[in-house]
Image (tube, rainbow, N blue to C red):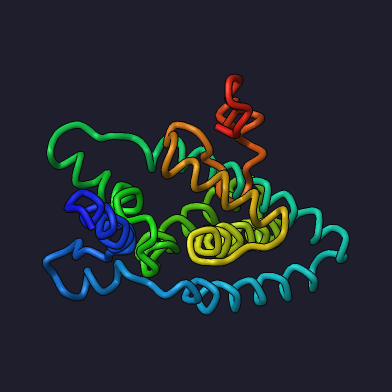
Length: 221
C-alpha cells in the first residue's frame, strides 16, 4: 500500500470521529454536563406538561376546538423553528465574544454534527424558550385558550427534537424519512444558507431557501 493510499484509508475514520466528537464547552463541570443531553430527555420533561395541558384544555373546550388550537400552536412552532434556525442560530455575532456565543448556540453542532449528546435542546435552552412562548401566547390568545395552543407548540418542539436526532442517528427506510435526512444533511454538508426547516421543510419552499436541482448534472443540490 502506498503512503498516499494509507493516509486516505485513515482519513475517513478520523473525519468520522471529528464529526461525532463531543467537545467540552464550559470550564464549569456542571454547566458542561448540562450542555449534553440524551435524546429522550425532552420527552420526559415536556410530555407530562403536554398531558396536563390536554386535560385542562379538554375540560374547557370540545375536542375539535382543542385540536384546532393545538394545530395552530404547532404551526406557530414550525415558524419559530424556521426563523430561529435561519436568523438566530446562523447569525454570526461580531467580535470574539460574539463568535463564542454563536459557537455555543449552533456553531458547535455544525463542527460536530453527529455528537449524540448535542442533537436535542438542553433544558437550559428549551425552558426559557417555552416560558417566553407561553407568555406571548397568553398575551395573544388569553386564558384559557393559550393552553391548547401551547400544547400544540410543545408537540411541535418535541417533533423537531426527535426528527433532528433521527436524521443524524436513525436509519430511515421510508421516503419521508429519507427526504428529511437528505435535506438536513445537505444543509450541513453542502449549503448552510439553505434548508432551515428541520421538521418542517415546507417553509423553505415558501421562503425560497429550498435546495434546487443542479441543471447540468440533474442531481439534487
